[in-house]
Image (cartoon, rainbow, N blue to C red; front, side, top):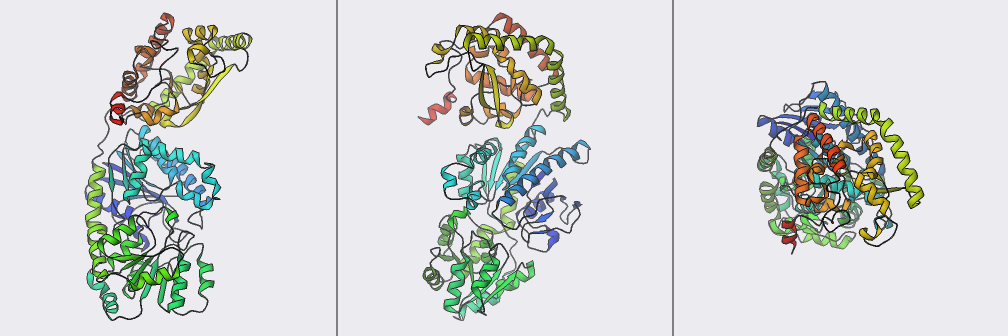
Length: 601
């Protein structure tokens, strides 16, 4: 298989830090004989600096690397980082299309993209259809939920990020599967419409020999003062101030390795207390030495960060360090199950001190056991690779030129026939204004390609009001529907690329959550003015059968099939068949497939 990985944050093997998730996924997939491409950033997230590496190279594991130019940022949770995500995703799309078109890259059989960035997941939806490949989201943080951290508290009440939330739902619905670093993340994806297979795989680590950390175990058994260590970001999602105040109050040794937006403020808080040291960003060997001198690992995070199981717990557990943690969800349950640590209340110095002093007996050994069972990369990433290999190559791929040739055909045909339909369009607009008054057009948001909404325009056929459709449908409106003249304004979205002449009809947004995974594939193509379902009964056909026709068209579309549908549409319009569903003014509301409704009951 040719597998594309998209993650702009993880350390690269060449950078000296310990291997992170995507380096280990890439290594495992290459070892299994797959061609792997890793799309990442030329900006290193851990150090907030540019990478001194070429834009393309093959790394030490045999993974093809693409380092895309990215907008730098300094704060982990910030609007600038959000802008950086958007820019990275746009560059990924443009570069990938250019490389494939130039035959420098092969079609992907599978795309795995981390979330965040949310924008990358959205563009992966595009690639899924464009390349006819499978697409898996790897959820490492909950976006856009984390974006609310930089907004006022009233922002969530006003749903200011509704477009981003909707973008996340669309990505989850179109993903063929979900990989996640916590069980709560897979639940999050399933609530947003993912019905594909899921796998929870914690952030694994290459476990070092036990002898590396003998010093830490010996120190812990001597009943000396605790030596606390914190590895990670120094940002606003972390309760480091409580940890520092506890170290000042007790005189315990505290080593802090990492950097972030709150670093200078925290250093001012420490002042001249020599028992607290800041180390900045450390290389892998330096981290190992620091962990060997420590006796307790610290995870001081706010629950609002949305983190399920942070990366640093694997580092502490591999070193055999008991863990003092403030997260009250999945991390707390994990530590309690293994008796490998204790919990403290965020912002409460006395609670933190008590948590350190009341660590379970044998917590160091229990922590090492937790590392072997939950975080060992030798166990985790073969499972991940097997999960990814289960997404086989789709059949009936279209050539890359198909979407472009279809677009050219649509535009040429609409423009060549404009002397015929444009005067008719103006005449119908004038008659609608004179007979029915304003507004002339009916406008409504409809989900289009990849379920992305667009503005649909039609000539208005109903009176304004709240009565049933049958009562509001006017006599002139019936004529427009019978002759399909109400569809004339849809020729303009064809020219702008939002619609095609032939494709599944754009339906109501509320139907998106009612589709089965199979029915959702109708959005893998541009919506059309006419389609395979329209020439096989139009509104006389039941919804389930109509969606079968739509999905069949998406998987079998071709130039000659479009010609056939256009020819059949002309006869359908002249015969005025299938205009309404039996007993309805137009068509009944789609409430979900019959089997799904029975299961709900």
